[in-house]
Image 1 (cartoon, one colour):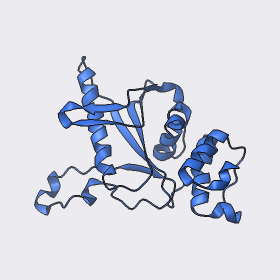
Image 2: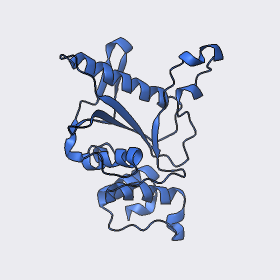
Image 3: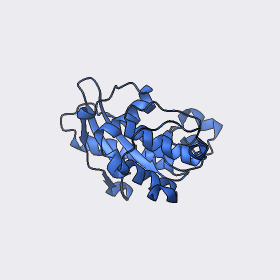
Image 4: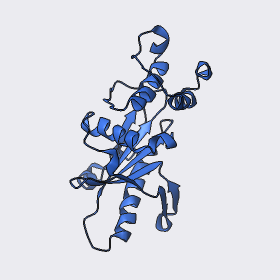
Length: 204
């Protein structure tokens, strides 16, 4: 999955589908790989994000992160926020010219079979005293999930196939002949589908 997401064309397709309803706002040629290690001695943090790209097309200057998640986890909203602020701190240390920092956009790609049922924002985890409610900094997580009722407009056939073959296996429609139509599917995509869904017949 990490290798798949490191493909710039696939990478931007996820963000275009989520943020821009499939409009090709982000272009793959404008993405530059960044170090995915998110180490921070002050926070005792020694982790890494799956894929991070710096993006600059002359109009939009930003950093994009995809974090793959295979199961619903309440701590994910905290981890996503941590990665975001560590990314800002890392860029701040390199910002010698005192320029404005690029915005960091994190997208959590959930590949589990059951719909996401954990927190999507910090306020779902924290018991916020109403006396301090106006001072509470709520963090919301951008979540794109294979299951659920949301449909995404992917432009790349490989991304579409990965996403909707998994979904049609999870909801059983692929066995009933009611699933989406799929054209030629690459073996590399099927290998990821097999890893995610663990269906034996894909080995054939």
